[in-house]
Image (cartoon, rainbow, N blue to C red; front, side):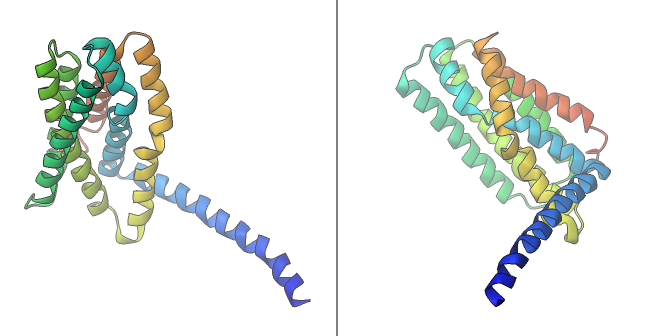
Length: 212
């Protein structure tokens, strides 16, 4: 009789857990939407997802546009990674807490770096652009993430970070399909450049919110 009672009660507890989870997501989204700075950095996170789909744009940019082999593609990824490592170190050793203006500046720098890399006429300039893009993009994401946490109330911080994960890695299936369609249509340069354009557009929307 006791086992039967436990088996009947378990679905009720699971239903309550799912209800609380759905309520937590809605609460996090609502809270983020009501706070302009958090909303602005979440837009940056969504736009950055298009840049970090290098598994889609990277091979096409290397092979179709610059006619590089496997070694050239690997070098391109390694250079981006080295730049990203330097950007992560820069974010880690930054003395002051990030401000909206710092995030805004890095978002503009990242968008411009992506557009210039997409337009690079030669392989050496492509590699330089990849290094710069890796540096500023990872620095941007680290500070934007930190800013979102610092601007959140302690009781809402976990939910805001849940929304952040929905915005950046969570949107990858959607952004990867969009980038892949552009690469197959207009071309790899345009697909890579769209990431920079989307970052600048997100920054334009959140410009005033990140003024301090």
